[in-house]
Structures are given as structure tokens and as C-alpha cells.
Image (cartoon, rainbow, N blue to C red; front, side, top):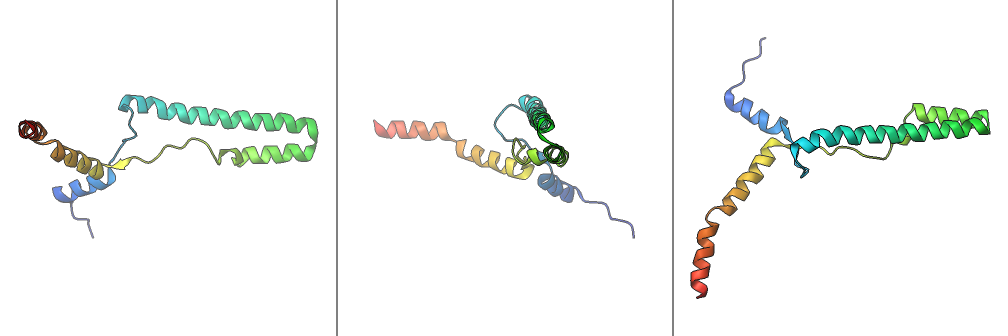
Length: 119
């Protein structure tokens, strides 16, 4: 049974729920550079920690070396560190923008009216 095509309204609803926007607070171009940089720094930190464990383990004994190698292989050192937080759905971002636009509407008129009443 063939799938029926989606209507434009269904496509829009899916887009608003599935599409995401980065609202962390920094510039979009900064995020494109910062996210890969943070991931690279975290990977370097983990590799450095693993290399230190292996080099120290080689001076001790065979059992310590095996433990260091297995923890490096299984990513034990990756439990903490930097993780990118999820972006927000497009529908929520648009809703917040519309709400702030409503709050801004007519504020100069309200300010002028309050100024005239204070005199």
C-alpha cells in the first residue's frame, strides 16, 4: 500500500517539531567553530589521560598495564567532560519570539502615556 503524500500543513507541523535551532546564546558562526573545537579538546584530554596511564602502568607491572589498556579501550575516561546540549525545537523558538514581539508592541506609546500622566 503506497504512502499518501503529506499536505503542506502536515509538513509544516513536522518541520516545527523536528527542526532544531541553537539557542545557547553565542553567534551562529561562533557555534560552528566552538562545537568541533570543544569536541577535539575533549578527545585530546582523554587521549592524554590514557597515554599517561599506559606509560605509568608500563613501569609498574603487567596487571596494571592490562587495566590501563582496557580502560583506554573501553572509554572509561570519557564518563565526564564536555557534551553539547541539545538544540531547541523550531516551534518553541518561534513561539518565544512571537511572545516577546507581542510584549514589545506599543511600548513607546505606553511609555509616553505614563510620562504624560506623571506630570
